[in-house]
Length: 501
Image (cartoon, rainbow, N blue to C red; front, side, top):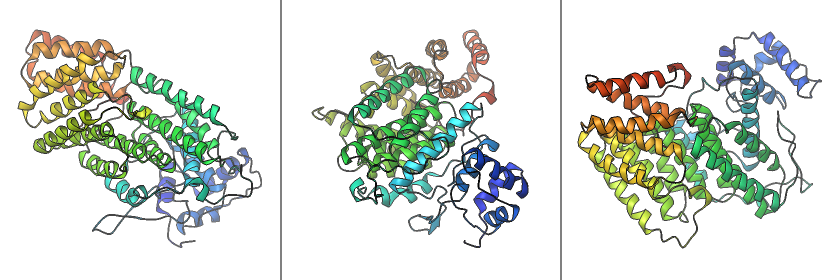
């Protein structure tokens, strides 16, 4: 017991609006529903948890997380409630301690538990029609400070981790978790194929339609990870978990569930690192950086990109490095740093062409092709054009090159390219061309469930204002107004960010 108030639990308790007596009764009722009818909590115990920082024994933390998740309509974990023992504080270089809300990094056995707990809560919200909202995003500096040293060291092999006497021991089942069982190489191959199917669907149609299926699959993998398989199988299983967590995060980001998305990216980085795949861990963190630029927080994105690039290790392929550079360049463009952006994009081009292809790319890099390099270059220059309009011509140049190569059915990426082109044309004072690309985007957007495409459309719509006297553009404005979802239908974001697939 710390004798200090648990401020995290205190804050959530205040938001929930319960009395201490009500919470005690709810804990007892929920515990019984979860298979623990013997639990008897009273008001004095709740007071000790909140006011004195006492951490209750299992299953109470999981029970509380389930109660707050349902009450607040967003995923609430035991870390969010400050109910994890032996927490640690992150260090910001040169400026002392910073808050580390998720008690990062997690031990391997804790990673599997967090993964299973979080996905179980997420599925519960899906079933009950609730929307994940209300939580705050962790700052890029907080994440990078907490995870820096951990990501730069080699993970402990499964053979080095503590084991229970039974070699196929499974940890106690958490709330709504998959009934775990040991698996073999054939089952892992099937899981790996399912990742490819989900990834292709997301690229074609957006994250909304298959997100629940991905989260459910990830929940099952979390249960499988509670067993200690032979090292080669355990590493592959961690790899599946990392890939599914990135997809769950990307799909969540695509429909505006931003805190949920960030949590999945952090889970993915942990899973990849436990599987010995540091480049995958770096790529997962780069997704969190993209998210930050989209939300108008490029400084946080640069913090995360510094960690992603340095933590990827020496084995990272040139094409992967090129992809990481394009994200960094986009963040620099959002801050108006044209010289730095151009230098970073030049390095990305050099890295991309230096990849001889003699080493097959990992599955998660197979969707970063030449058109994606051009698309990111177009996005960076289009973003910089908000600060330096002369950059619009370069955005058009790269946008045209990207669209000429878009033949593989990734509809969402094509929509983003259309919108980059339309915005660049408006900034370059070419409303006729802008109108053409805007209409190409508009006619395609009904085929996806991506909220980010609507965010980008709103950014482009803002640029049409100075041309509202043109009959053609005024008609376009009216059509966009009719097509856009109600403002409250998607999560808002900060100004200055422009989304990208």
